[in-house]
Length: 186
Image (tube, rainbow, N blue to C red; front, side, top):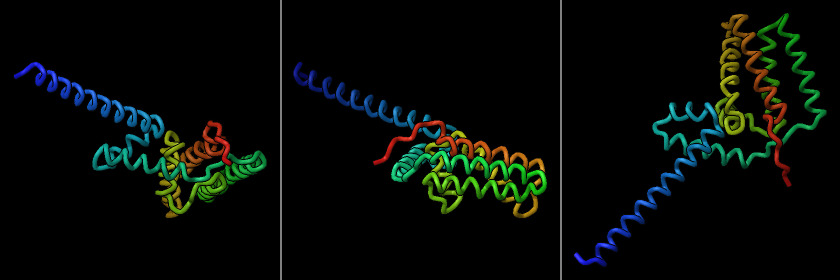
């Protein structure tokens, strides 16, 4: 084999290896981005999926849907009103815990709607919230489970109390815009 032919083969191999390294680097960067953005929801989605690739595709689709939504911070008047309504729900818990949990669920849904999240169903709410609120999503999931038990009169007072704590976690995050400054929309 001639030196030129050997050199051409070596260059081709180096180019293929460099392209493979770039592809792996991009894949790892995307994966790291999804893990950071979705928090624990990343692992949950991977576990519930057929493959990591399918799960990551779903998470990227969630990001695209979320980016198309008109999520906005609340005016201070609305934040104050929601804070007062939450205080009323907490006071209601003392006398009517089941009603309070149901009202907390409704209040969180209303807050989501006013922020710009679609509220057409719990599963879709979870997906939409997962993009910006993945770290508190488990609280919402747990609260919703207790609320479902409560509607069948199967929740204990301790479970209802826990649901209120879980709802409060997401409520606070939604009320404060998730602790992030929201970009201005034109």
